[in-house]
Length: 379
Image (cartoon, rainbow, N blue to C red; front, side, top):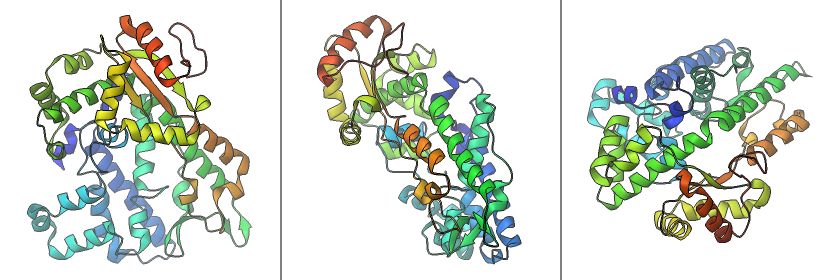
């Protein structure tokens, strides 16, 4: 748990928003608090929560314990490691010190919650579409980025257990609750806003792509990827220097970031094409070959984001239909906006951008949607 104090919540976002130096530890404690509030609300509705309260609270507190430095980029874009909230989390919790601290009985209950052997709502309050994790990080990340975005506290009053799972009450006494629907849409809009402005900011992605290149070289030189599970951000940087050399890491540290040489978006690519490129460039050797082809005499780094979906179908509603059935225009617009977040970037040193752009235009067989100095399309 203490290691999480030394992991920045948002990776390299502090290079864009200087206030974003908050840690995974803060988020974990915040999730613990928010899940407690959700449990109180469910108890108020008559759900029998007490026998699960302690196990759910501990599961919320440790949900990110297997997180790695720059974790979302390492897992979701580079695909160097499986998700931290799956087998890696269970493996971390199986260490003897956790069993000793919790005791065999409580430890077993926590594992039951995480492995879906307890009632479905116990896991859903930690990890679903609208959950304690999301309700903490949306507010926390917006605050530290200095963005005036928030959600209404009433969202807690809408949460209930329906058909065994966590749900949002969208009707009461036979009447629809448009306020609940609008607040759900607001949450999804806030998540989109943070993805657009913070999580997918091009300068943040450039820094993380540069560190990702250093990580790939370090792994080739013998750094075991599972060792990342026990590292702090500082230890991660030192390991990259030891295995891959200092220039790339120092460039990020001093904010000498690569620039956008070539950009394509969802406007010029079909869904299947985005999936294919995302899968191809998640393979280090395939990515390296493409980068070498783009800049045989210089430097070019590809960052291909995973295709983004809103996943609204996972929001359980008591009214028995999905969110689009209640607010179709808002939801359709949001779905489109989420899909349009996809980008494929080629980053390069400023002085090499024009040459790399020309090579990328030929390699991908389409022009860049971004020109330095002016925007061809909204990026």
